[in-house]
Image (tube, rainbow, N blue to C red; front, top):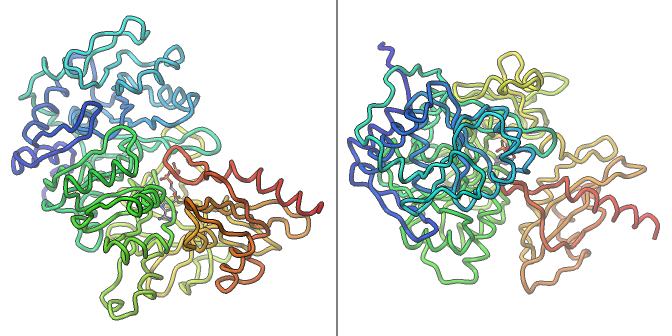
Length: 542
Ligand code: ADP
């Protein structure tokens, strides 16, 4: 066979050539922006030429600090297509982590959204390698702000205007060359950098196009709500461009109302995000009168999708819901929960059981689960740590000692505890660090949360371990009630009782106004542990 390399260049060139009139619709600070793949191609080439003129060379890291919009999409293709590395920076990280990852990746240039400039200005004196800053703004000739202190500061639009719209992309890219990088949003310790190769990204997109996975195709209108600064918005901008799908990019600070409006107005067929996004959207749909008929599927991952949420989308709104699993280290798609044809005759609730698992491994990737005794039995009960390998799975953290712990014998050790059933469906029991160890047995915080979130009065629920003198740890639930609902602790425990063994039932239920979230919208359990510990300690004294 021929050895033609798989690179990101061919993704953008295909869209330019075969889908020149298809559209990319972006929500920006000044309204809705629309342009075609032909224009995307021209502007991407202009940007690539401008970056080259600014001194970007093969292998250099170029950072982006931006929401989901058309300029960010241009950067997604311009940077790797000159052989440089697209480093997407999570805008919600703590300043010390932003400083750490920019210095650690040695970004040469930063592309920054205008509304996010203050976040970079605040840390500018600590940045050791950045040579120029580029501000992405709707203003055509965004002038240098003499007070910003970012120097030199270029206007993105001016660079694109003055660039060469017929610039030729780098022809000499090896498919194993780095194309992108993203740091994990560390809840403990420093963020860890993951480098994505051209090959990994292209093969990952192949998998996203398969009918048995996300089935992304030309006829789709794809809206990633998952940020472009988090695992390349799960690779969707790459796949959607390659396949010529229409794209909707939701812009700065998308709220449930904005998301609902964009789906309705632009006839989105496939959208993707973490469960908190969909919990928020459900709440919005209950309030407003939206037309969601265009959606053929919602793709949900990043944390466990509660069964109650899946059921609500499907039975109340007739919107199919696909649960998937992955990590920053895995580009990210690893498993996806779709039924096999033999399941189609099962009653809905039994189908839901299967579809609420994290699903089956996608073609191209291998998984296994191990514990002290070796590989776990595929009985849906025995628990072990999930190990993954494949062509879009990282094999190390970027210049990081911690690689040794996570990457061993050719496998990624995920730190996720799973069971596997006889048909291969994987169920995540918990992250190792979130499992509740009570009297030597494990309790899954995820299972309790999902059960609680199926209660009609509950908006969000997180279950954490609190120290216990006799049992070592006991579960405590923290719940946010839906607006206008009242539910008592006793009622919730009674609601859980038939579903769980007695010793799984939470020792306490705390009613809170909000569950703190991580920078990518997952429940931040660390912030609740102290509260839970205090509550149990107080209970003991009563
Ligand atoms: P971060 O580490 O920044 O939170 P990642 O996206 O890399 O971001 O997180 C990956 C982790 O998220 C996985 O190891 C797993 O614990 C969790 N996760 C991802 N998808 C799911 C899912 N569908 N169900 C349960 N947990 C998930």
